[in-house]
Image (cartoon, rainbow, N blue to C red; front, side, top):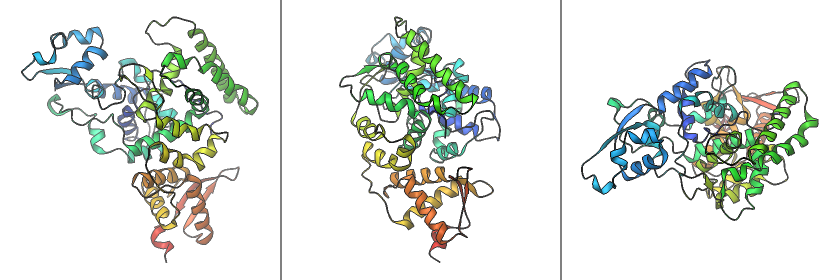
Length: 424
């Protein structure tokens, strides 16, 4: 477990979660990568030019979201009402612009630019999808890719003859993808999200990004006060000092009139708002404006999350109950052992290492996601682990555990198919 659950190097470009799909897939292709390769390949992929037919929503996006320079290339198109263009009109745009123009997206901001190559990948690091240093795939990233279809990955590839039909949008997230990323957000940034959304739930009206960004200095200092005595290493102390420095810098920016550019305030608050829009836990009255509203899903999920219990306890004992209510999935708490074991076995087959071991947390998380989204009920991670503990006592030849130096279960290995062998 991390010393404090706070994102490292949050940046404003960390808005659209759909861009994680090609990034994590690229990281999975080799055992080691470097930040430059991953980041630049992502930018090259989403910024490739494609030819598309002009639509009303595309025209709206061009007028509102593109820069002056980008709009000039389509000046004739944007200067006339759409009805004045009876013939089919083709426009040349970046692939990401075509995706972001889609009105089905709850937020149509988040376009990546060239310098974001070294910024956006940190979102995958913060979410535990790729490993720092080697930028290789972690088990959580493997779980994420198991929930991403081949068509979604191909959607970011170079279209044949640079033509694009526009009907398929890989920036949209499926429910399983949302659940895994939400778990990862709470696990990686929960110490910030918990007090932030506790305050936001008290807001009856909409709020702007900079307005709630002003809450962060107090939140950061609260984290420091609570955790300073728990620091056990030089790295822990460096995290505390960096967080304190960031709080001071953000506070200074709250007193500066906004100019429309990027600054540490918007860098720090945007990754705590925009991705939650993708996840369905915040609403935007205007998909182009950085203004937000609490919705029913926000209330149902965060009412459970902000209780006095620890973040670890929530993730282990209450996460699936909270998302079941937040997303109105109508699942029943599943108690049938054989069904749960079948989900565990399927998740294990996806994630196991060449030696047969896999993180018990990752197995239970993926199994739980598969169960609730396939309408077979839900079970908490703690319930999943307890079933495996019980089975290991009954059939020690089938289930093996590894533990860390504190005696906490870390890895599990199955010697055969649990569902079939348990019945023998």
